[in-house]
Amino acid sequence: MKNGLEDVVAAETQLSDVNGEAGQLVIRGVSLDRLVEYARYEDVALLLLDGLLEERLDRDSLCLRLGQMRKEVFSHIGAIDDDLLHLPPVDIMRALIARLADGDDLDTALRLLAAPAVFLPAILRLKRGETPIAPTPSLSQSADILTMLSAAVPGAVQVAALDTYLVTISDHGLNASTFASRVIASTKAGLTSSVVAALSALKGPLHGGAPGPVLDMLDAVGTKDNAARWLGRALDRGERLMGFGHRIYRVRDPRADALKGALTQMIAAGQVDRDRIGLAEAVEQSALAILKERKPGRPLDVNVEFYTALLLDALTFPRDAFTGVFAIGRTIGWIAHAREQSLEGRLIRPRSVYVGPLPKAA
Ligand code: ACO
Image (cartoon, rainbow, N blue to C red):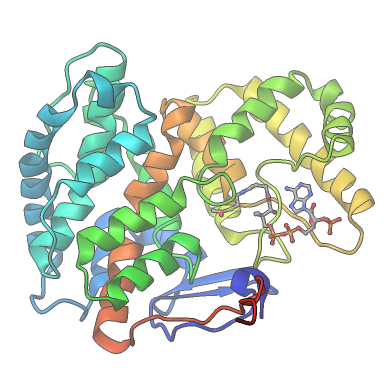
Protein backbone atom coordinates (compact mmCIF):
# COMPACT_ATOMS: atom_id res chain seq x y z
CA MET A 1 0.00 0.00 0.00
CA LYS A 2 1.36 3.45 -0.95
CA ASN A 3 -0.07 6.13 1.30
CA GLY A 4 -1.12 9.08 -0.90
CA LEU A 5 -0.39 6.89 -3.97
CA GLU A 6 3.10 8.43 -4.03
CA ASP A 7 5.09 7.15 -7.05
CA VAL A 8 2.17 4.99 -8.20
CA VAL A 9 1.67 5.26 -11.97
CA ALA A 10 -2.08 5.36 -12.62
CA ALA A 11 -2.31 6.62 -16.21
CA GLU A 12 -0.46 7.05 -19.48
CA THR A 13 -0.73 10.59 -20.80
CA GLN A 14 0.38 12.64 -23.78
CA LEU A 15 -0.70 15.86 -22.11
CA SER A 16 2.01 16.93 -19.67
CA ASP A 17 5.14 15.69 -17.96
CA VAL A 18 6.39 16.93 -14.60
CA ASN A 19 10.08 16.21 -14.03
CA GLY A 20 10.54 16.85 -10.32
CA GLU A 21 14.28 16.27 -10.25
CA ALA A 22 15.09 18.56 -13.20
CA GLY A 23 12.38 21.12 -12.39
CA GLN A 24 10.89 20.87 -15.86
CA LEU A 25 7.28 20.96 -17.03
CA VAL A 26 6.46 19.86 -20.60
CA ILE A 27 3.00 20.40 -22.05
CA ARG A 28 2.33 18.30 -25.15
CA GLY A 29 5.96 18.36 -26.20
CA VAL A 30 6.61 22.03 -25.41
CA SER A 31 8.64 23.09 -22.40
CA LEU A 32 6.88 25.63 -20.17
CA ASP A 33 9.61 28.27 -20.47
CA ARG A 34 9.17 28.17 -24.28
CA LEU A 35 5.39 28.00 -24.10
CA VAL A 36 4.99 31.17 -22.02
CA GLU A 37 7.10 33.07 -24.55
CA TYR A 38 4.54 32.81 -27.34
CA ALA A 39 1.36 31.10 -26.23
CA ARG A 40 -1.86 32.77 -25.18
CA TYR A 41 -4.62 30.96 -23.31
CA GLU A 42 -6.37 30.06 -26.59
CA ASP A 43 -3.16 28.50 -28.00
CA VAL A 44 -2.82 26.22 -25.01
CA ALA A 45 -6.50 25.29 -25.17
CA LEU A 46 -5.97 24.18 -28.79
CA LEU A 47 -2.75 22.38 -27.92
CA LEU A 48 -4.30 20.41 -25.07
CA LEU A 49 -7.56 19.55 -26.84
CA ASP A 50 -5.91 18.54 -30.13
CA GLY A 51 -7.32 15.21 -31.32
CA LEU A 52 -9.30 14.53 -28.14
CA LEU A 53 -12.72 15.65 -29.38
CA GLU A 54 -14.60 14.49 -32.45
CA GLU A 55 -14.96 18.01 -33.82
CA ARG A 56 -11.72 19.86 -34.67
CA LEU A 57 -11.18 23.60 -34.48
CA ASP A 58 -8.69 26.14 -35.79
CA ARG A 59 -7.62 29.08 -33.62
CA ASP A 60 -10.07 31.60 -35.13
CA SER A 61 -13.09 29.35 -34.70
CA LEU A 62 -12.01 28.49 -31.14
CA CYS A 63 -11.83 32.21 -30.25
CA LEU A 64 -15.20 32.85 -31.89
CA ARG A 65 -17.02 29.95 -30.26
CA LEU A 66 -15.40 30.49 -26.87
CA GLY A 67 -16.51 34.13 -26.97
CA GLN A 68 -20.06 33.05 -27.84
CA MET A 69 -20.01 30.53 -24.99
CA ARG A 70 -18.99 33.25 -22.54
CA LYS A 71 -22.09 35.12 -23.64
CA GLU A 72 -24.26 32.02 -23.25
CA VAL A 73 -23.07 31.12 -19.74
CA PHE A 74 -23.52 34.71 -18.55
CA SER A 75 -27.29 33.97 -18.46
CA HIS A 76 -26.63 31.55 -15.56
CA ILE A 77 -25.52 34.25 -13.14
CA GLY A 78 -29.20 34.97 -12.44
CA ALA A 79 -29.07 31.77 -10.35
CA ILE A 80 -26.85 33.49 -7.76
CA ASP A 81 -29.28 34.17 -4.93
CA ASP A 82 -28.48 35.64 -1.49
CA ASP A 83 -27.78 32.23 0.07
CA LEU A 84 -25.30 31.36 -2.67
CA LEU A 85 -23.65 34.78 -2.55
CA HIS A 86 -22.59 34.23 1.06
CA LEU A 87 -20.42 31.24 0.11
CA PRO A 88 -16.73 31.57 -0.87
CA PRO A 89 -16.31 32.40 -4.61
CA VAL A 90 -15.01 28.95 -5.53
CA ASP A 91 -18.04 27.28 -3.93
CA ILE A 92 -20.40 29.55 -5.87
CA MET A 93 -18.52 28.67 -9.07
CA ARG A 94 -18.87 24.97 -8.31
CA ALA A 95 -22.63 25.34 -7.76
CA LEU A 96 -23.07 27.26 -11.02
CA ILE A 97 -20.93 24.85 -13.06
CA ALA A 98 -22.89 21.92 -11.63
CA ARG A 99 -26.03 23.40 -13.25
CA LEU A 100 -24.57 23.12 -16.76
CA ALA A 101 -25.53 20.27 -19.09
CA ASP A 102 -23.24 17.24 -19.10
CA GLY A 103 -21.72 15.71 -22.21
CA ASP A 104 -18.51 14.78 -23.99
CA ASP A 105 -18.68 17.00 -27.06
CA LEU A 106 -16.91 20.19 -28.10
CA ASP A 107 -19.79 22.45 -27.06
CA THR A 108 -19.73 21.01 -23.54
CA ALA A 109 -15.95 21.50 -23.41
CA LEU A 110 -16.15 25.11 -24.60
CA ARG A 111 -19.00 25.86 -22.19
CA LEU A 112 -16.89 24.54 -19.33
CA LEU A 113 -13.91 26.68 -20.42
CA ALA A 114 -16.11 29.77 -20.64
CA ALA A 115 -18.06 29.19 -17.42
CA PRO A 116 -15.42 29.85 -14.71
CA ALA A 117 -14.06 32.81 -16.71
CA VAL A 118 -17.49 34.44 -16.70
CA PHE A 119 -18.73 33.32 -13.29
CA LEU A 120 -15.78 34.47 -11.19
CA PRO A 121 -15.78 38.18 -12.24
CA ALA A 122 -19.59 38.27 -11.91
CA ILE A 123 -19.45 36.71 -8.42
CA LEU A 124 -16.76 39.16 -7.29
CA ARG A 125 -18.75 42.14 -8.54
CA LEU A 126 -21.97 40.92 -6.91
CA LYS A 127 -20.11 40.42 -3.63
CA ARG A 128 -18.95 44.07 -3.87
CA GLY A 129 -22.56 45.15 -4.52
CA GLU A 130 -21.79 45.96 -8.17
CA THR A 131 -23.64 44.92 -11.32
CA PRO A 132 -22.01 42.10 -13.27
CA ILE A 133 -20.60 43.09 -16.64
CA ALA A 134 -21.58 41.03 -19.68
CA PRO A 135 -18.75 39.42 -21.64
CA THR A 136 -17.43 40.84 -24.91
CA PRO A 137 -17.15 37.81 -27.23
CA SER A 138 -14.63 39.48 -29.55
CA LEU A 139 -12.03 39.84 -26.77
CA SER A 140 -9.53 37.17 -25.84
CA GLN A 141 -10.43 35.11 -22.77
CA SER A 142 -7.87 36.96 -20.60
CA ALA A 143 -8.82 40.44 -21.79
CA ASP A 144 -12.51 39.65 -21.27
CA ILE A 145 -11.95 38.33 -17.73
CA LEU A 146 -10.16 41.53 -16.71
CA THR A 147 -12.79 43.69 -18.40
CA MET A 148 -15.63 41.84 -16.66
CA LEU A 149 -13.78 42.22 -13.36
CA SER A 150 -13.03 45.92 -13.41
CA ALA A 151 -15.28 47.45 -16.10
CA ALA A 152 -12.15 49.16 -17.49
CA VAL A 153 -10.22 48.24 -20.61
CA PRO A 154 -7.13 46.36 -19.32
CA GLY A 155 -3.62 47.28 -20.44
CA ALA A 156 -1.60 44.96 -22.69
CA VAL A 157 0.84 44.14 -19.86
CA GLN A 158 -2.01 43.06 -17.57
CA VAL A 159 -3.62 40.90 -20.27
CA ALA A 160 -0.25 39.30 -21.03
CA ALA A 161 0.32 38.65 -17.31
CA LEU A 162 -3.03 36.89 -16.94
CA ASP A 163 -2.36 34.91 -20.13
CA THR A 164 1.00 33.81 -18.71
CA TYR A 165 -0.70 32.71 -15.53
CA LEU A 166 -3.45 30.75 -17.33
CA VAL A 167 -0.91 29.08 -19.65
CA THR A 168 1.45 28.26 -16.78
CA ILE A 169 -1.16 26.46 -14.72
CA SER A 170 -3.08 24.85 -17.60
CA ASP A 171 -1.89 21.32 -16.88
CA HIS A 172 0.45 19.59 -14.46
CA GLY A 173 0.55 15.83 -14.62
CA LEU A 174 -1.57 13.68 -12.37
CA ASN A 175 -2.20 16.14 -9.54
CA ALA A 176 -5.11 15.57 -7.15
CA SER A 177 -7.75 17.50 -9.10
CA THR A 178 -6.68 16.03 -12.46
CA PHE A 179 -6.79 12.55 -10.97
CA ALA A 180 -10.29 13.31 -9.67
CA SER A 181 -11.29 14.41 -13.17
CA ARG A 182 -9.91 11.17 -14.67
CA VAL A 183 -11.64 9.00 -12.04
CA ILE A 184 -15.00 10.54 -12.93
CA ALA A 185 -14.29 10.33 -16.68
CA SER A 186 -13.41 6.64 -16.30
CA THR A 187 -17.05 6.02 -15.33
CA LYS A 188 -18.17 7.84 -18.56
CA ALA A 189 -20.10 10.38 -16.47
CA GLY A 190 -19.38 13.38 -18.75
CA LEU A 191 -17.10 16.42 -18.76
CA THR A 192 -19.23 18.61 -16.50
CA SER A 193 -19.17 15.94 -13.79
CA SER A 194 -15.39 15.64 -14.17
CA VAL A 195 -14.88 19.38 -13.85
CA VAL A 196 -17.14 19.68 -10.78
CA ALA A 197 -15.20 16.89 -9.06
CA ALA A 198 -11.85 18.39 -10.02
CA LEU A 199 -12.85 21.83 -8.77
CA SER A 200 -13.89 20.29 -5.44
CA ALA A 201 -10.42 18.73 -5.12
CA LEU A 202 -8.64 21.92 -6.16
CA LYS A 203 -10.05 24.08 -3.37
CA GLY A 204 -8.21 22.29 -0.57
CA PRO A 205 -5.28 24.22 0.99
CA LEU A 206 -2.84 21.42 0.15
CA HIS A 207 -3.63 21.85 -3.54
CA GLY A 208 -5.02 25.05 -5.09
CA GLY A 209 -6.17 26.76 -1.95
CA ALA A 210 -2.75 28.06 -0.88
CA PRO A 211 -2.16 31.36 -2.73
CA GLY A 212 -4.56 33.36 -0.53
CA PRO A 213 -2.76 32.15 2.62
CA VAL A 214 0.58 33.20 1.04
CA LEU A 215 -0.62 36.82 1.19
CA ASP A 216 -1.94 36.29 4.72
CA MET A 217 1.57 35.13 5.62
CA LEU A 218 3.17 38.21 4.03
CA ASP A 219 0.74 40.45 5.94
CA ALA A 220 1.58 38.68 9.19
CA VAL A 221 5.33 39.02 8.56
CA GLY A 222 4.78 42.73 7.93
CA THR A 223 8.35 43.95 7.40
CA LYS A 224 11.52 42.56 5.83
CA ASP A 225 13.33 42.69 9.17
CA ASN A 226 10.70 40.52 10.78
CA ALA A 227 10.83 37.75 8.15
CA ALA A 228 13.36 35.34 9.70
CA ARG A 229 11.89 35.66 13.20
CA TRP A 230 8.26 35.22 12.06
CA LEU A 231 9.02 32.23 9.84
CA GLY A 232 11.08 30.56 12.58
CA ARG A 233 8.22 30.91 15.05
CA ALA A 234 5.71 29.55 12.54
CA LEU A 235 7.86 26.43 12.10
CA ASP A 236 8.25 26.17 15.91
CA ARG A 237 4.44 25.99 16.09
CA GLY A 238 4.53 23.11 13.59
CA GLU A 239 3.02 25.21 10.80
CA ARG A 240 3.91 24.92 7.11
CA LEU A 241 5.19 27.89 5.18
CA MET A 242 2.64 28.57 2.47
CA GLY A 243 4.04 28.64 -1.06
CA PHE A 244 6.92 26.26 -0.30
CA GLY A 245 7.31 22.54 -0.86
CA HIS A 246 5.85 20.21 -3.46
CA ARG A 247 5.08 16.51 -3.70
CA ILE A 248 6.97 16.12 -6.99
CA TYR A 249 9.47 18.99 -7.34
CA ARG A 250 12.72 18.54 -5.46
CA VAL A 251 14.05 21.77 -6.98
CA ARG A 252 12.43 25.10 -7.81
CA ASP A 253 8.98 24.80 -9.38
CA PRO A 254 9.46 26.02 -13.00
CA ARG A 255 6.04 27.65 -12.87
CA ALA A 256 7.30 30.00 -10.16
CA ASP A 257 9.87 31.42 -12.60
CA ALA A 258 7.32 31.73 -15.42
CA LEU A 259 5.10 33.77 -13.12
CA LYS A 260 7.99 35.78 -11.75
CA GLY A 261 8.76 36.77 -15.37
CA ALA A 262 5.21 38.11 -15.84
CA LEU A 263 5.43 39.91 -12.52
CA THR A 264 8.71 41.50 -13.57
CA GLN A 265 6.96 42.95 -16.65
CA MET A 266 4.25 44.38 -14.42
CA ILE A 267 6.86 45.88 -12.09
CA ALA A 268 8.60 47.49 -15.08
CA ALA A 269 5.23 48.95 -16.15
CA GLY A 270 4.77 50.40 -12.64
CA GLN A 271 1.76 48.18 -11.92
CA VAL A 272 3.02 46.48 -8.77
CA ASP A 273 3.64 47.86 -5.30
CA ARG A 274 7.45 47.73 -4.95
CA ASP A 275 7.32 47.45 -1.15
CA ARG A 276 5.17 44.35 -1.49
CA ILE A 277 7.68 42.76 -3.88
CA GLY A 278 10.58 43.69 -1.61
CA LEU A 279 8.85 42.02 1.33
CA ALA A 280 8.05 38.92 -0.76
CA GLU A 281 11.68 38.60 -1.84
CA ALA A 282 12.87 38.89 1.76
CA VAL A 283 10.35 36.25 2.87
CA GLU A 284 11.38 33.92 0.03
CA GLN A 285 15.08 34.20 0.91
CA SER A 286 14.48 33.74 4.64
CA ALA A 287 12.12 30.82 4.09
CA LEU A 288 14.57 28.99 1.82
CA ALA A 289 17.36 29.45 4.36
CA ILE A 290 15.31 28.36 7.36
CA LEU A 291 13.74 25.36 5.58
CA LYS A 292 17.20 24.19 4.55
CA GLU A 293 18.34 24.43 8.15
CA ARG A 294 15.25 22.87 9.77
CA LYS A 295 14.47 20.16 7.17
CA PRO A 296 17.91 19.13 5.94
CA GLY A 297 16.66 15.79 4.60
CA ARG A 298 13.88 17.27 2.47
CA PRO A 299 14.64 19.73 -0.38
CA LEU A 300 11.93 22.40 -0.05
CA ASP A 301 11.81 25.25 -2.56
CA VAL A 302 9.31 27.85 -3.67
CA ASN A 303 6.21 26.51 -5.45
CA VAL A 304 3.76 27.96 -7.97
CA GLU A 305 1.49 29.38 -5.29
CA PHE A 306 4.02 31.90 -4.00
CA TYR A 307 4.26 33.93 -7.22
CA THR A 308 0.63 33.22 -8.08
CA ALA A 309 -0.32 35.18 -4.97
CA LEU A 310 1.79 38.18 -5.96
CA LEU A 311 0.69 38.16 -9.59
CA LEU A 312 -3.05 37.80 -8.94
CA ASP A 313 -2.84 40.44 -6.22
CA ALA A 314 -1.22 42.80 -8.73
CA LEU A 315 -4.04 42.02 -11.19
CA THR A 316 -6.49 43.15 -8.44
CA PHE A 317 -8.11 39.79 -7.81
CA PRO A 318 -9.08 39.59 -4.12
CA ARG A 319 -7.27 36.80 -2.28
CA ASP A 320 -10.39 34.76 -1.63
CA ALA A 321 -10.78 34.52 -5.43
CA PHE A 322 -7.32 33.09 -6.17
CA THR A 323 -8.46 29.46 -6.19
CA GLY A 324 -11.20 30.45 -8.62
CA VAL A 325 -8.67 32.01 -11.01
CA PHE A 326 -6.60 28.83 -10.74
CA ALA A 327 -9.73 26.92 -11.78
CA ILE A 328 -10.19 29.18 -14.83
CA GLY A 329 -6.75 28.11 -16.04
CA ARG A 330 -6.77 24.46 -14.99
CA THR A 331 -10.19 23.59 -16.47
CA ILE A 332 -8.57 22.96 -19.87
CA GLY A 333 -6.22 20.41 -18.29
CA TRP A 334 -9.10 18.69 -16.49
CA ILE A 335 -11.10 18.46 -19.73
CA ALA A 336 -8.16 17.14 -21.77
CA HIS A 337 -7.36 14.50 -19.14
CA ALA A 338 -11.01 13.51 -18.86
CA ARG A 339 -11.19 13.01 -22.62
CA GLU A 340 -7.91 11.09 -22.72
CA GLN A 341 -9.10 8.83 -19.91
CA SER A 342 -12.46 8.32 -21.54
CA LEU A 343 -10.90 7.46 -24.92
CA GLU A 344 -8.03 5.26 -23.77
CA GLY A 345 -8.38 4.35 -20.12
CA ARG A 346 -10.27 1.78 -18.10
CA LEU A 347 -12.64 2.26 -15.20
CA ILE A 348 -10.42 3.38 -12.30
CA ARG A 349 -11.04 1.00 -9.45
CA PRO A 350 -8.13 0.54 -6.98
CA ARG A 351 -8.27 -1.77 -4.00
CA SER A 352 -8.00 -1.06 -0.29
CA VAL A 353 -6.53 -3.15 2.50
CA TYR A 354 -9.09 -3.87 5.21
CA VAL A 355 -7.60 -3.14 8.65
CA GLY A 356 -10.88 -3.10 10.65
CA PRO A 357 -12.17 -5.72 13.08
CA LEU A 358 -12.98 -9.19 11.78
CA PRO A 359 -16.49 -10.58 12.23
CA LYS A 360 -16.94 -12.57 15.43
CA ALA A 361 -17.18 -16.32 14.97
CA ALA A 362 -20.83 -17.48 15.29
N1 ACO B 1 6.71 24.28 5.32
C1 ACO B 1 7.35 23.58 6.29
N2 ACO B 1 7.61 22.28 6.23
C2 ACO B 1 7.22 21.64 5.11
C3 ACO B 1 6.56 22.29 4.06
C4 ACO B 1 6.31 23.67 4.19
N3 ACO B 1 5.68 24.37 3.23
N4 ACO B 1 6.28 21.39 3.10
C5 ACO B 1 6.74 20.20 3.52
N5 ACO B 1 7.30 20.36 4.74
C6 ACO B 1 7.95 19.32 5.55
C7 ACO B 1 6.93 18.50 6.32
O1 ACO B 1 6.62 19.07 7.57
C8 ACO B 1 7.66 17.18 6.45
O2 ACO B 1 8.62 17.29 7.46
P1 ACO B 1 8.88 16.05 8.47
O3 ACO B 1 9.37 14.94 7.58
O4 ACO B 1 9.92 16.59 9.40
O5 ACO B 1 7.57 15.74 9.10
C9 ACO B 1 8.41 17.07 5.12
O6 ACO B 1 8.60 18.42 4.66
C10 ACO B 1 7.66 16.28 4.07
O7 ACO B 1 6.34 16.76 4.00
P2 ACO B 1 5.16 15.96 3.27
O8 ACO B 1 3.87 16.37 3.89
O9 ACO B 1 5.48 14.52 3.21
O10 ACO B 1 5.28 16.52 1.83
P3 ACO B 1 4.15 16.43 0.74
O11 ACO B 1 4.82 16.04 -0.50
O12 ACO B 1 2.99 15.60 1.13
O13 ACO B 1 3.63 17.93 0.74
C11 ACO B 1 2.74 19.97 0.15
C12 ACO B 1 3.51 18.73 -0.34
C13 ACO B 1 1.36 19.55 0.64
C14 ACO B 1 2.57 20.93 -1.02
C15 ACO B 1 3.54 20.63 1.29
O14 ACO B 1 4.84 20.99 0.85
C16 ACO B 1 2.82 21.84 1.90
O15 ACO B 1 1.97 21.65 2.77
N6 ACO B 1 3.15 23.09 1.45
C17 ACO B 1 2.49 24.26 1.94
C18 ACO B 1 1.16 24.47 1.24
C19 ACO B 1 1.32 24.85 -0.22
O16 ACO B 1 2.18 25.67 -0.59
N7 ACO B 1 0.46 24.26 -1.08
C20 ACO B 1 0.46 24.48 -2.52
C21 ACO B 1 1.17 23.39 -3.24
S1 ACO B 1 1.36 23.72 -4.98
C22 ACO B 1 -0.02 23.07 -5.71
O17 ACO B 1 -0.57 22.10 -5.32
C23 ACO B 1 -0.60 23.76 -6.86
